[in-house]
Structure formats: C-alpha cells, structure tokens
Amino acid sequence: MTGIGRVELAARIAQDIPEGSYVNLGIGAPTLVANHLPEGLEIILHTENGLLGMGRAPEPGRVDPDLINAGKQPVTALPGAAYFHHADSFGMMRGGHLDICVLGAFQVSSAGDLANWSTGAPGAIPAVGGAMDLAIGAKNVWVMTDLLTRDGSSKLVAECTYPLTGVGCVSRVYTDRAVFDVTDGGFRVRELLGDTTVAELEQLTALTLEERS
Image (tube, rainbow, N blue to C red; front, side):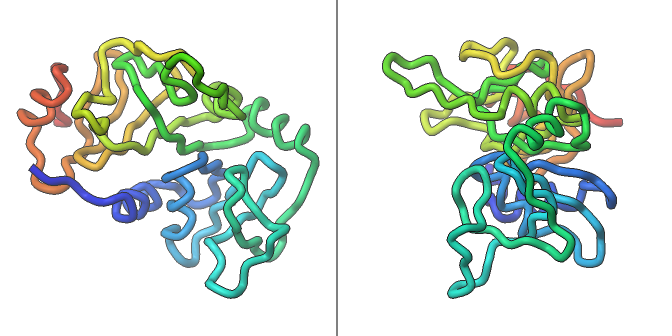
C-alpha cells in the first residue's frame, strides 16, 4: 500500500480552500500549502508573527531575511500585505477571524480532539506557541499529517494519549493515505489517496471508519 508525498498532499489541501478565505498555515509541513494555491484566486494567508497577505516561498537568491513566518522560514509578501503587532495577530486568531487553519498533529481523536504540541515525554521542551489559539479560534481546523508515526502507530486514535491542544476542534484530516472528515460518529473517509483501501485504513488505525456515500 502506498500513499502520496507531502508536496502532493499540500497541493491537494490547496485545492479545497475557497476563494476569499483567510487562512493560517501552521509550522512545518502545512507551510507547503502556500506554494500550491490556485493562480487567480484571492486567498489571504495569515502568519501569527504579524503578517496578512503572505505569498509563496521566495525564489533562491531573493530571500529577505526580515520577512519570515512563525516558523522562521523566509516568505514573500503579496501586494497590499499588512504588518502588525503580535498582539493584534493573536486577536485575529482568537476572535474567530480566520476561516481555516492547517496544523500538524501527533494525534487526532475520533471526537476531533487535537494533540500537536507535546508527546509528554520527560524533558520535552514546551512548544505550544499559537496552536491552542488557532485550534479554538479558527472557524475550520484542518490537520495535515502522515497517517502513521515512524514506529507504525496510527495518528488517528479513539482517544488522544498526548497532552491536548484543543477539544473537539478538528473538522478534517489530510493524510498521505486518505482524507477524513470528523463527524459525530467518528472518522469518515472523504477521499482515498494512492492505492489505499478502506479495509487497509481500518487495519492500520484499528478504527471503524465510515465510508462517504
């Protein structure tokens, strides 16, 4: 069974973002989505360190060291972009002004609970950042992640065992094997990716999955 790569998954997520949306892309793999937004659509990207109107990653040799996202990666700014104080940025996040945020995850539960800031390991460095604010403040929380951890454990679980970032906040999960909607009955397979089957997903996750009609 094979799935798709992160770049392909980022492009798949970009296809689902409606025109006119205000979107925050979380640190890590979600930042790749910025490079695959459809040409000609107005989609406004927000980064929590104080920029609205973020563009694609810069071309080699055209990096502005003063222009970075929350993950300290170099970015570009589109015409009309706005810069503002960190406190104003968090006010946007907490105030329900973002239509979508795309976050990474260690675990997502069948109830839509999100764990993405710590595995709870002894000595782990606290690094929640703005994830809690995004998880609760955004109108739609999408997760971008591999289905399995490096040791083969499923990141989709019945209940999270890691410290929670948000409760019941995730509405959709994009993985390398399939796209899932979070419903009142648990995970529903929205789209299969690669040559994955629902039976294989159930075996890997040890969950009963609802199939989209």
